[in-house]
Image (cartoon, rainbow, N blue to C red; front, side, top):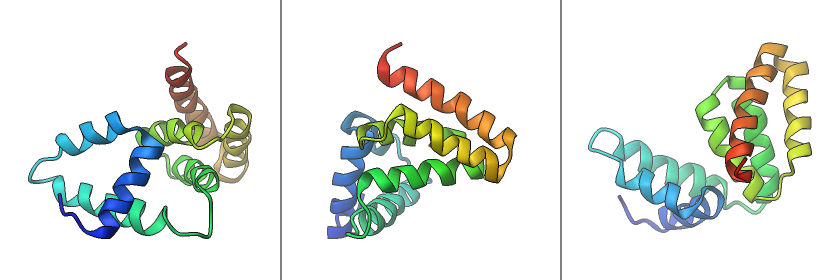
Length: 127
């Protein structure tokens, strides 16, 4: 992995939001094919975007939940539900975000998002 200042800032935030174990496993699992994408997303998504002063982590998490739900990116949604809980988004707030998705993006998108968010919430809560 490259060690630019932006990458290091991104790595720090990524670990804070997603958990050090998850990020370390993700980095260790990168191979020659996926390494560039892993570096790029850490540097630009986490380093350039998440470290900007305009929004706090909770707000960024809430936006990610809505966008990932709208796009039907369930694997990433589950990951970011866990991160959102870490960033102080409550289960009730997640529910409201997903209801908003259902209204504006369609009930199937909302239903799928609720199913996947419920799984992630149960994992975090240990239920």
